[in-house]
Image (tube, rainbow, N blue to C red; front, side, top):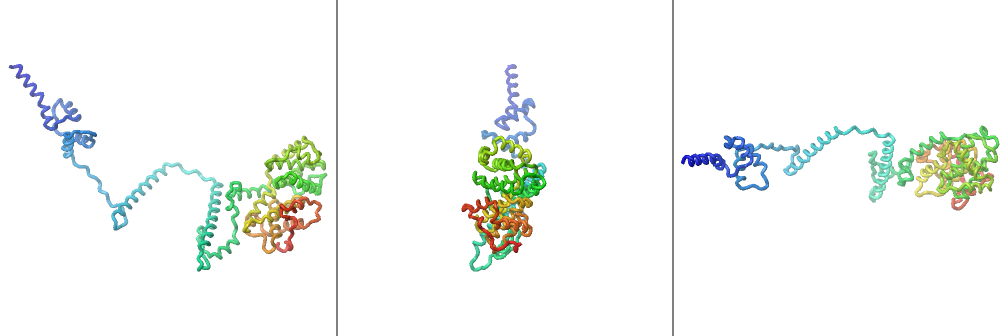
Length: 469
């Protein structure tokens, strides 16, 4: 009896906490089990609001219905969290509330973007300085693009011209001035035409053309040969011998089909050598064919062989002599072969001259080349710069083809760098050379008398150009 009563009393005491817990909830959670373990099996004095609230805010994927009920009971004792009231963030008054909301969101977003951008810029390293040459090229490119867009705008406005209105108002976007069509055409005749905007090919180098020819103008002063080397350097040869050699080289170029750039460079190398070293009569022809060999290697795609130049001289010189002379010339000139010749300037000036015509005039190009090649034979033209000779050849060629208008305009003056009055001496000397049909050296005249060159060697001007200058 005693043992059974004591065992019954112990069982009754061990079941008291479990009965108390089950009275509050039918399931013991992990949080409650932890608390019961810490308090040695006794229930807590205060409900576990904090633990139950976490369990209610972060439920599991699958829970029993009784567990949800207990979470709701516990959460009901926790005060609700207060939320901030959104205020009106718009400053504009609209009748439609939806417009207000959308504008408010846009304003708030833009402020956030600006705030983020400011923070980002504060962390970015300072920008590197821009190369002034690159900036200058970009400015030139932008100017050419502006001019091109202006021309396109002129074309569009002319197409959209009304039949009733006699004059269409044209507004230049870069200047902001309004002009009539007649005023634009009048100003266009007096303005400078952009000759580089039409050429999009990479070989034309339209973006760098102005800088390239500015460098050539400097180089023609730096690498200029002596203008009186026949008196100061040479002892055996004369001006007439030089003329005969160059006149014969014209026929050699025609025989082997060499380009005109090769011929101009050949003459430039001959004058460079004769300005620095004396040479005998017997070696003058050797100097000519060797300079043409060097120029062919520099300008031509398929240059003639050394044996070809030996053959053209009727085997007067051997292969060894030509190669030895080549070494001597290159060593004396320090391998400086990029010489600014008249042909290089003539190519640029012809573009400026052709810009005043509706279509390119092929006779103008042939005639200018003919006049420029005439100066290569005459020793007296060494005193003129190659750019000056090229500009004078353009002036006289335009005057020969048309005596009704002034051959010089603002575009030519801009791209050549010469005024019409500065060409007077050279143009008069060139016209005298053009009219001298009794000259003994006539290889250039025969060349340009052919039909493939439109026979420009036979053209002369009826009116003298002296009155114009």
